[in-house]
Length: 137
Image (cartoon, rainbow, N blue to C red; front, side):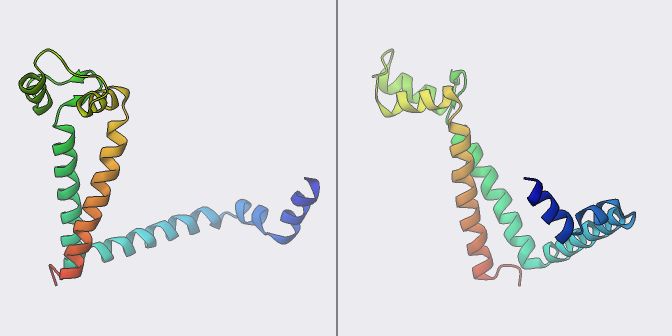
C-alpha cells in the first residue's frame, strides 16, 4: 500500500494540484464553460423539440401507469384498478393472478422503479424519433 502511495505521489501532481490556489478557480471556470456549452447545445430548435417531446412523454407515461391505482397502500379508491376489481372480481380477488401480482408489486414499492425505467425508455424512443424526423429544423 505504501508503494502505491509513493507511486501516486511521485508520478501524479495531485498534491500540487490540490494545494494550488488556482485549482478552485480553474474548476469553477471549467464548470461555467461546460454549462455554457450545454445551454448553447440545448438552445438549438431541434434539440428543444426533442427535449420537450421527452419531458411530455415521460410525464404522460408516469401519470398513466401510476394512475392505474396500484400504490403503497394497496388499491387507490376510485382508480381504474378499484373499478376493475369491483366489476371483475367483486369481493374475491384470486391469489396468484395478474391483479394480485400488481397489487403486491405496488405495495412493496417495486412498481415505481419499473415505471421510471419504462417511461425513460419510451420517452427516449419518442425523442429519438423527433430528432430523426427533424422536427424543429
